[in-house]
Image 1 (spheres, rainbow over the protein chains, first blue to last red):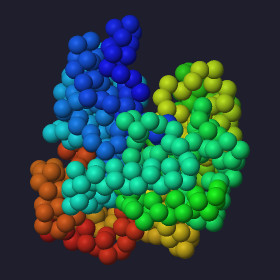
Image 2: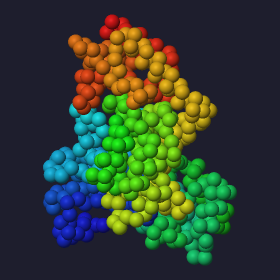
Image 3: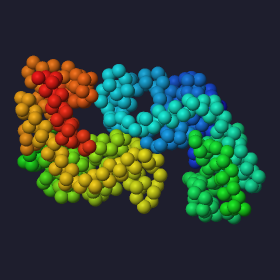
Image 4: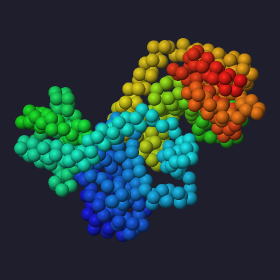
Length: 249
Length: 249
């Protein structure tokens, strides 16, 4: 995680055109605070791009208030929609930058200037819309509206806290300190002497629970437990805690 | 459409690394014969890439026999699967070329070397698979296997011939001569004095039939009628002919 001071120093030194930050990082389980970063980026004439894949629908996210110029997300995390479609948003500063390009985007598929014309008034053909996925996303959003966004955020937080407490009572430590700990993806330190992969394998085969192994530098160091969208439920918390207890107890 | 002689002359002059051909062209309704093109490309040390979006599952296509090194298609045309997933294949010559790259592919999303590792034995993470679309495609392919590929091709051809005859009896001409005329997408010349767009609008609002308008150079010149996959049925041919008869008759 970066503090505002660290970000300011980095922007001053590197003067980037875009600052890209991952809001909810699924390898580490850490939340990058984004409040105030947009103002900082404006000071340095820089766009703010946020990866909100594991935060959208699961924890507070305020694109406009935080001055986020571009954000993308995934459908299959806290939105609980099948994978295969990605929410994407561009604010006026990002669109202005796109429109100022002097050269063509070098590929068709990811050319947002064409996508913009397709989505816009002109309806210029760019791609065939993935109709079934759009219906699926709409239904996922409808369920979120039904629950209420604030209620959904609280639910994610409450179930994460249940899990954190339960893990502590099993003598397991979370990898991330609490102010930066994600409610949607919890990284748990593998205790010394425990074969982490053997545990996740047993959880999968004996309990039908998929817990992720560590990635990159954290390979062999942590387990990764997701509590996202529909899956963020008290009974799931109890189930995963029971399974851990029986497996490593 | 290009003849083998024209393609040979083009390859000799331009010496491209890749020859890209559209097998079934949906703007014109023309079929580009691909037999023999693969051998020609091998002669000129060139890869053959085929766009089979509107041919796969609707008309004869023999990737190996025709020496096609790379092909992509769409799910939503003759396969009659929802849109949102694209069949893609690379043969050994294309993979060898990919593996010989000296520079990294400049974007993650379309990096086939990463996709290859994800699909291959290594299972290196590249993307979250669009599970629902894969089930949908599997079901579409199961229905094709149930019907039989040869039977499916014959059905497309037979229904197209029904449409061609019916159009002729209404005094309407097809834009493409028969040996190159696609069975999956039929372009019909708009008779002089007829407002093409008014007709497609009426077909849509009064008959719930969507007929495409001409694109590019053919804008205002042709209508485009699709007879693809599940939609290639005698009753649909009769329905569209009746609707045309009442609308322009």
